Length: 385
Image (cartoon, rainbow, N blue to C red; front, side, top):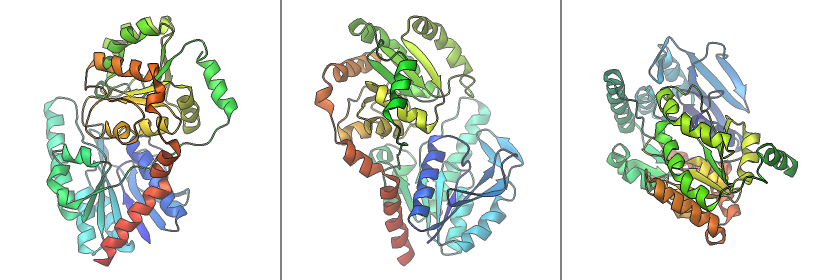
């Protein structure tokens, strides 16, 4: 099968969406398919075309950036050629160019499938309001032209103003999740570097330092947690300095965080590569995902943690609460409620045996090969129609 995957940003750009797309594309290749990724040359130093892990990557030149997107004038011309050459088209949303690609799928009688990752909510402002309206319009046009829409969970879809309109087109497929295998020495070295033996329990958070991630909810919960566990520490994995649009939020929270840093209760780890993340999770006693809005649709880091036997405390956001609800490895806290977060963290720290799950079953369900097989069935069914 010749599969065309279309998205705005691909590797080496790093986001949950690009990681999902890369894992799925590689899994398709390993299953014997020819995969082309059509994306943008968001960085002029990147090659226009290259092979990455057996995946053909074609990057369309960018004229200029617009908010979180880009304008690439030749995108439509390249899409026309590539859609004609492939058997099926898969697009990742949010994406400004998706309607045109989906329409080409219709015109060339090629099945067009959307994978909807999350809502796009830009900061307040007249221009961003306009961009939000344009993106919503583009998403709806893409949905109309597509044959099927993939979502991570029915829970998120039922509460999404966009997805709930297209229930007749929805298909639920869990996301691909994997971590590299590492040896015990790497895990122990990480523990030593972060003083894990002396500062326990360890509460992890893996996210960008952004308002919608609910960092202040964890900050507000810490005094209650520290009262019961005076040696507890937070390890924060992810970008935290110079995060676009988050400087005011960072400046507001940093005085409190610096105080915790000086006491050994908080450490910023920065962006970690996959091998470092694989060493990060086994050193945790709990992972928190206190996100606040629908820009978070699932929280893939929960699955990465659960694969390492780590219990999770997500907020009760639609979709985000589902890993714990499905696999039982943790407890769900109320959205934006520090007292509920503290209570939930303390419960899983006090009685971890109550929340143990089947790690091997979880690994199997989210294995990229398992996910690719589900997409295969979807594509084959659409091609027969």
